[in-house]
Every structure is written in C-alpha cells, then in structure tokens.
Image (cartoon, rainbow, N blue to C red; front, side, top):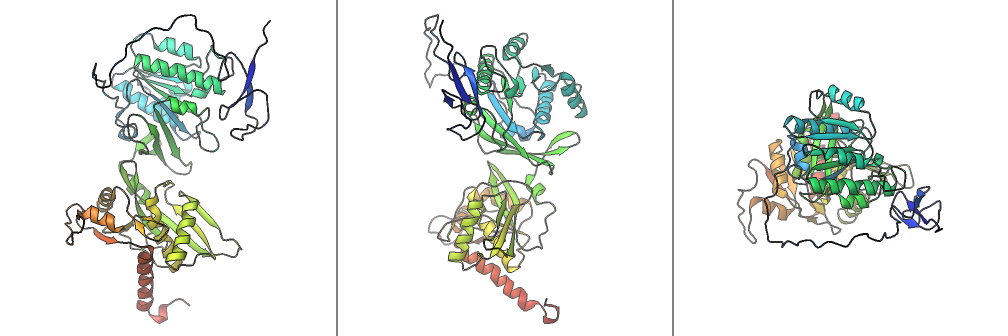
Length: 486
C-alpha cells in the first residue's frame, strides 16, 4: 500500500514545508502552518492526464472577431468611477475591508440598482442566513428589489445553480474565505480552499461572461487575508477604507486591469445606507479652524480626482531626550526627511520639539506633492503665524531644499478655484505649465490658469519659510504693546 504523502502549508503566505513548525520561515508568522493532503492543494503531486490535449485555434492580436459587450453600469457614480467606468462582463473583482466598514451594504445597494435595471443579480452569502441579508435590505429600503439570495458555501453547487436559467449579470460571493470545494481535502478558509474556490469562480465568470465580486477578509495589518496569489488571479482589487468614528468611507482601486489604479470613490454612511459624496474636497475641509497656526490646505490628487485636504501640524517643546514624532495619515519617514531639510537648508531648528502631523478627515496621503504643505504647516506652528485661509500648497521638496514640480498642476488649481481659494503656492515649473508659458518665454500667457487665482512660485524651501517669518515680524510690529501677550 502506497504511503499517503502530506505537506504543510502556511496559511498566511502559502509557503510549503515538509514538516510542521511553529514559525513560518518565509513570512515569519506563528501558528499558521497546517497539514494538508498531498493529492490536493498547493503541495499536490502532478496527476497524470486521462486524455490527450486538444488543439485549439489561435487568434491574432490585430484581428477583431466581435465587438466587446458594454460595461455594466450600476448607477452609483462613485463605484463606477473606481471600476474604470463600470464592470466589465466576465471580470472578477476582489473587495476587501475591515469588519463593519460597510462592504455588504455597498454590495447590496449595487445589486439592487442592477436588479431594478432588469439584470439578473445573485447575492451568495456564506456568513449570514437569507433572513439576515433580507433584513439588511429592508432597513436600506431595498426590500422590493429582485435580487436572488442564497446562503451556500459549496462552490460546485453555486456554479451549477447559477448556470441554470438566464445568465446572471452580477454574482456577489460574501465571502471567499467561507467557500469550499469537494475536490480539495482541506478545511474552509485554508490556502488551498481559498485558491481552489477562487479558481472555480473565476473559470465560471470567464466562461459565462458574468461579473463576480469576491469579498475578502482582512488581517490585523489591513491586508486581504488568504494567499496573495488570489490578488494576482482576479482582474481588480478594491479596498474599502474608513474609520469607525467617521461617517465617510473611501473606495480605493489598488489593481485594475480595465481602468486606472489609485482611483477613489467617497461615500458617507447614513441611516439609509451609503450615500455618494459629489464634492469630497468640501467634506474634508468642512469645520476647519483656519485662524489656528499650523494648518495648511494641500491640493492633492487621488487617481484622476483632485482633492483638497487640510494638513495640521503641532510643534511643542519637548521634555524628553528623544522628541516625539507622531504622524496620522502620512508617511513617518517623509516627515523626518522634511524636518532634516528644514534644519539643513532653512535654518529651522526642530530637534528639541515634539512634532505632531495629522491629515484632517482621516484620509491617508501617499504622494510626495504634500511636502510643501507639510513644511508650511510645521513652520506656521513653530512661528505661531496663521497661514492665509484662501491659500493652497503643493510641491515636492528635494533633499537640496529645492521644490520640484508635480503632475496635474492645472487640475489641482482648478479644484482650488472652484472651492473659492484665491492663491496657490506651487513649484515654478508647475506655475509655468499651468499658465501656458513656453520655454524661455518672458511673458506668460495666463489662459490655462483659473481666473482670479494668484500663483506664487516657490523654488526653494527657504522662500516659503522666509515668507512665513516675514508675516510673523509684520504681525508683531502691528500689534500694540499694551495688548501684546506677556
């Protein structure tokens, strides 16, 4: 009798070992290695084929056999924006987010919108009963929608059921970690089951031409749980972000084969579900105290959308040997670099101060164009001078102190002008591009820049520091001595 061959697979990264061990050598996680049968899963042996391979036809790249079907629009403009203009028939999307963030609410609203448009839509839940899903839909006012519901975890049964009757336009699987396949000898939620179930559903979507959305759990680090190979198998990876203490949610495209990446959609959680936010900049700037020193408005870009957010800084004397550096919504190493540049090239001493930097509204900024706004907020807090309430900042700061140009300068300026800002501090080359200046042309043509917006070029970090300190000295001279603080 042949001996059964087994392997040990890490449930965090999918690494395969020949013996059990407490810590995975590949990813460093503890207690994530389980035993799986050798005839299934990642460590399976090659099974000899019972039939010969068939010969299929190859198609040239330039040949057009048929016109691709139109995208599937949900009617939710923010969701359609993130997906690149609607769902592509036959595509598979992976949606991840923390528990309670609103993934199921978003999907049930999208399903109801498509069902009301006459499409066949199926919502398969592996975590909730049908009565629970129906109760949520009734709370959102969607109880009358013709969405087909089921509580099932077997992928073979799901594929066989959905293959009967009219072709479904959208299938939601909530969640992929609860699915299991009879062909794999492993518990649901393991690496082998997640990968095998996802492969079966992907094959079903490509064959039938239906859109399949897989809901994925996230780990404590915010990453989608399960093997990373699933993210490579699907066509798009979308994350649903937000904080429990805030009403807005951000839908962000991390990967998209049929549209731009890093695109975002903004929603607001209400009593009737998720409501779209048409003007996210006004949402993030609402309730700001413009008269407080240390606040600067940053004109940023999220995908193709310009977005204005407030960057808040607090510089306080430190009683510790090593001052604190606390950052929320930005990169901590980026703040350390800006502080070093300010000290080296602008003679701004911050080594004995605690520094706190916060992106108001809970948004996380990843682009380096926020360097100039962060530096202005730090100098404003240190000097105690409030920045003008109608001024925006953007620009990347180099290690030499020079302010480097950034992309999409014109879109940033138009968004600032639309919200009533009258001045902008930006890199010199960005100003020339926004104003339509040709190389070596002395008279700029201010046709591209928004009317009523004053552009202030800043070529070096010392220029913005000098301007803020000059305003500080002017305010001290204009203050009467009797009313000056002691």
